[in-house]
Length: 140
Image 1: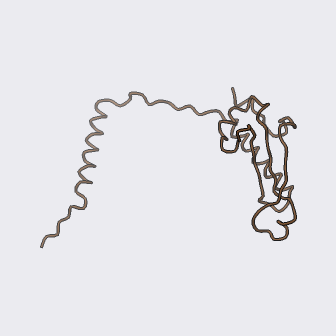
Image 2: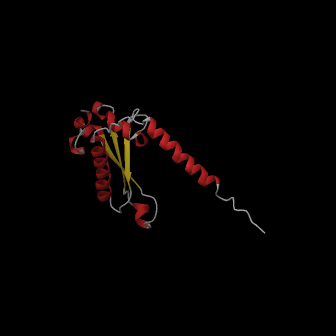
Image 3: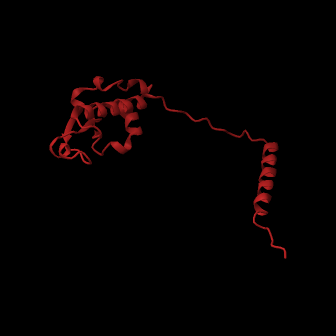
């Protein structure tokens, strides 16, 4: 099955398929934000990984046209913690991608004629309830 061929962790991915880049974080943090490159961006190239079809299917919003999955983190004030956070995000994505695809069972023609009549009666009762709402007339 497809979900078994996906890598279990980032350590099983070829090192040439991903790289980290660092930049300055935005938001609160004062001088720390202005002088340190704490934001971590992970770029994972899916081009040479044919078993990643399921990953591509589930994560269309974070995969660019160039077939590169991009994740970033700037939650923490240190580069190391942000790097761990990005790796954790990638691990979660890999874990979700490994789950089997859910199959939906079609209901088919299981509604009998008796069931259809019963449903029509219930709908008629509901219709009458709604029809009589707000029809209170002010009698003088």
